[in-house]
Image: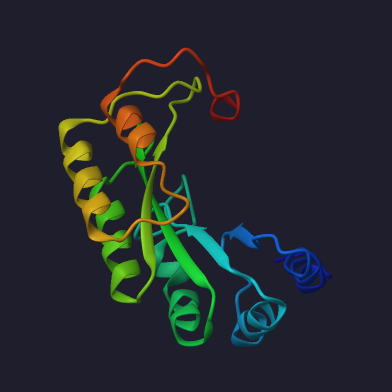
Length: 169
């Protein structure tokens, strides 16, 4: 949302018949910006929300972003997905379910991401986190951004022969 020619880029993508989607923290969403994204032809937007209330780990909270979500629900013609998170660094796993339920309530799709540990390794979710994961996965219809089999394997700690370097930084 910081790019000064974002809408032009989206139009350029759409004129060529490609899918135009973006991931944002949502902080800069306003009614005018959402309408400009509609006019440009944006098809999909995702916001990841890390918790219900901001803490020292993340400020991307439902409390901070709920007004932006309401604006999206009222004005967006593109599909919006709200992604909550579970994993080793998440202090309150129940927050992911609260975020997912709010997304559904507002008419969005909801996904859940599994976070890496501080060394970039995926750890199986705890039994509580796996229960929350399953509940969230059952709340919403599928979307193109859901890779269910792989994600379920990650949540259950199925071994993979790779390492996510981004998660280790």
